[in-house]
Length: 304
Image (cartoon, rainbow, N blue to C red; front, side, top):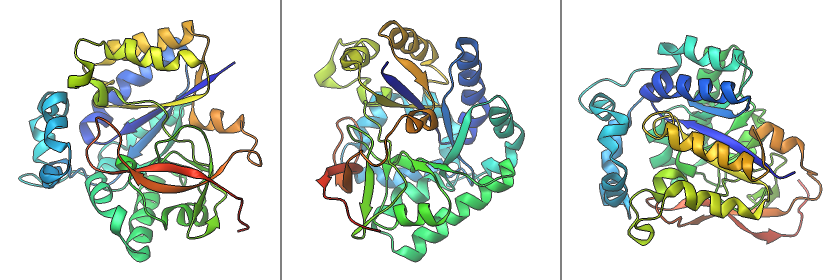
């Protein structure tokens, strides 16, 4: 039976407090596991305004009603309001998700800082930011993270080896077509990547080329191939105004015959010796602003 992993990216304080409980309740009611990846440091969402000149950013903001989904207060954090520390403010909410049996992992320490800075950062910067995230996660949950999903699908060549050094067992940092073992800095890193294989809801909403196409039906058409997939959703969207759409997706995927669950459950099905070895490259994903980390061509295995 094909497996579809559900990866929930939680970017903001509001998403943690409002969207996560709604999603957890829906998933519990349906008996479905998922992976929640948390931003655990300061919420500096307002600083994303610096992306205004990035390819596709303004169009995405217009299409997806950012003010409605994130709220004015969130859009002022880090600009006119101090950024609240999510891990400390929401420790109870975070631990409740883990206690309910969901897989939890690290999204980032400071979402905007990572998303805007990591692609061109050096190793010391990358190590510092990833370590900050691990420390804040451990402070919130009482244990270190073992699953990582990079904010905004942004990475550099140093991330995979640092993930291995810091004890991560699997990651979903990229966009791609199938699970792979990453090759970074010329070395095969034993932290499997489970890339997001499907477009996100906010990449589909309001796109001119998809005029009058229902995003739910579009996604279900893409999964009619009945092969393994990873779907990324956002606490601020599917946990808010698009909760009913997400429930329709869950119902549709079950009708298509999918097993639904977490990244960890998906990884447990893999033969790690047999999955392809691929570099991570920069590429464009339709509906998303700027360049993202994407799965590159298959390469011969390299000894670590």
